[in-house]
Length: 189
Image 1 (cartoon, rainbow, N blue to C red):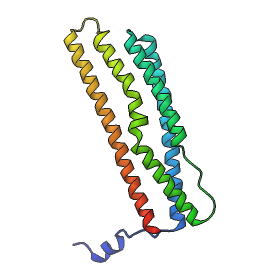
Image 2 (image 1 turned 60 degrees about the vertical axis):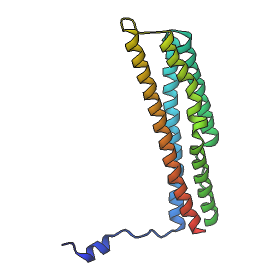
Image 3 (image 1 turned 90 degrees about the horizontal axis):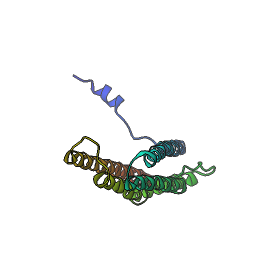
Image 4 (image 1 turned 135 degrees about the vertical axis):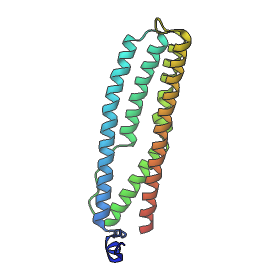
């Protein structure tokens, strides 16, 4: 039988809200933004390289143009991320200033994620669709039956949609977590 005193002593209690806790949360949040953006930029460099190679080696004007449109979309996404999603330095000064700063940053990131369909997902879609149409109408793998090739292209489209849906779901879930953090800060004031 479990000792009730042991359970009582080891149970989690609510963390006391202090300026130091809020400072640590805000600093951790800004570091996550910084490193998350750094990862986005690194992945973007790799994607630009891959789609640049596609422009060079893939046959058909539709796949080439689609690849070029994806590159343009990636540059647009990175511009939006740099403009609207960069990490900021923590302010020096009063506790109220820090709480306000952290709340504004949470709101800014939440709103950025809520609107990500328009600046993160949508810009890539025309290029991807044009690439798929190019594969469907202009280029088929030699020695593969056209019906099988069309099935593979359709499967690729479904996989692309699943990836887009997963990315969007993750964005919505993170925006929800940020909203809960905003609500917790609002309870303090």
